[in-house]
Length: 290
Image 1 (cartoon, rainbow, N blue to C red):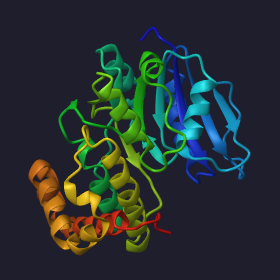
Image 2 (cartoon, rainbow, N blue to C red):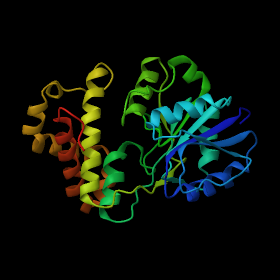
Image 3 (cartoon, rainbow, N blue to C red):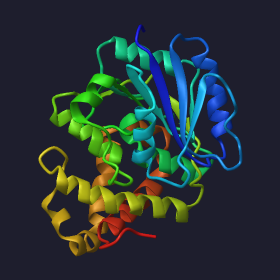
Image 4 (cartoon, helix red, strand yellow):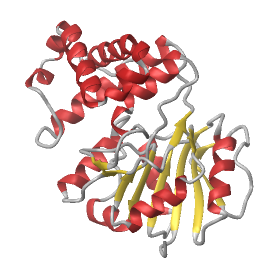
C-alpha cells in the first residue's frame, strides 16, 4: 500500500493498552509510512515511548468521537485505522486492512472474534457485534463500528469528522453519513481482533446494552430514512411495555441471519435475549441510564 497510514487508538486509562500496543507495534514495524496515535489519558504510564507511537494527552476525559477527531487532526496520513483500546488484533490485522483499502473499499470494518472470557463476556461480543463476527463472509453493511475500522482520507474530506456531540453511537452516525454520501461501508472479516472488554457480569452487560438502547433509538429516529426505525420507536413507554416481544423478535432475527451463533453458542441465546430487554429498557428512558 503506497499511502501513509495512521492507527488511531482512543484510550481512557485502558488497563490493556500496553498489550494492544505491543501487538500493533509489531505489525507496524513490518510496514512503511505507518504510525500509531494514542489519544486520551494514560495516568498509569502504560503507553510506551517509541518513535512510531505518538501520545496526545487530552488533559481530561473526552468522548470517543472527540478523541478520534483529534487523532485525525494530528496526522497527514492518507488512510486512518481506528482501533479501540481493548481490542487486540490478530497477526495479519494491519495487512488485511491495507488489502481491503487496496481492493477499493474506502470504509472497512474488520471482524471481531466470536470469543469471550466467560459467559457474559462472550454474550456481550455476540449481541453487540453479530454483524461483524470474523466467521461471517465479507460484504456491504448499512453501518459499522469504529472498534476496528479503516477509512480513507477522501471519505473524511467528503463527509466531515465525527460528530463530537454524539455519544456511544457516534460511529453508527458517521458511517451512516458516509452511506448517505454514496460511500458503501464494507465488512472485511480477515482483519480481525479479540475484544478484551471489561463487562464480565450481567450488571455490566445490562447497563451497557441499556445505554446503547437509549442512544441508538435517538439515532435511528434521526436517520429514519437510512436506518431501520419502526414507528414504535416514537413511543418510549410502548417500547418498554412490549419489550418481551421486541426482544424475542430481535433475538430470533439474529439467529436466523447468523445461524453460526445458534449452532456454536446455543447456551448464549438466553443471555442475548436479556441484552435485548436491556436495550428496550434503555430506549424507553427519558434520560441516559446510569
